[in-house]
Image (cartoon, rainbow, N blue to C red; front, side):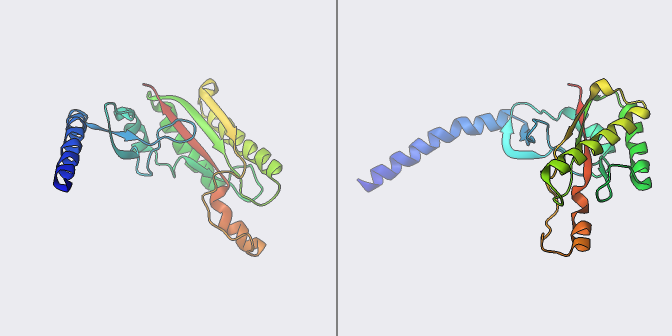
Length: 192
């Protein structure tokens, strides 16, 4: 009886695997990872982040890879000094390069500008500061010729922290540790 049960189970599993194998053979793409807003996640070297699961479509399409191969995530991230919403010289130079590539690209349909703040201070203040930072970047890009009708701006305050700092650190060290959270990320949405 045990051998018959094992044989039946193996036959059932074999029948179930045949359609899955034939589906995988006909599909040549992997599914992509998306962020909370539904945008395809792109790695720092400009490639779409893909899952191990197969998909019948490729949402990355070569366009996303092309524009992001010119602009990595780090190049599209603008950093701010503590408690500031003004651009420093280094970040202004970075924005000059970014704006030229975005404006010259025929692939970019719209731009999302998302501001962030670190955890120091009240949440309500950090939210306002993140909006000011995003507005600074939007204004700068508009001054370089980016059409603002295609720009969505948002401030998310201290959410989406990229640092791992102990809040018990002394203030000077904590401010230095949290530098990566004081940023604006420029996200590019390409034409289909």
